[in-house]
Image (cartoon, rainbow, N blue to C red):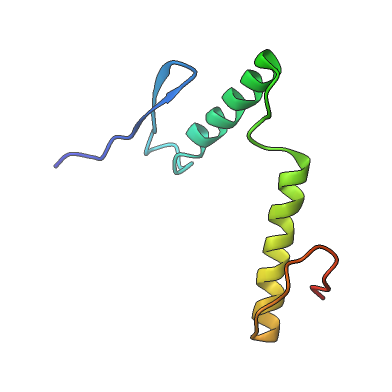
Length: 83
């Protein structure tokens, strides 16, 4: 029986997900995030994650909770009440 092996490329290096480390491949995701950040600093581009993106994702998470509480759709436009 063969275990599935996922190989990813991060900054030109091949990285294998270690199924025994318990991270579920999160180290590879974190490596990609760091690679994107260093590339943005080095080349002057946009990083893959930013405070603005984090706020946007947090608002979506809050909307999911609000939708569940209300058992209805919620308005995601800026300034809409999610309480």
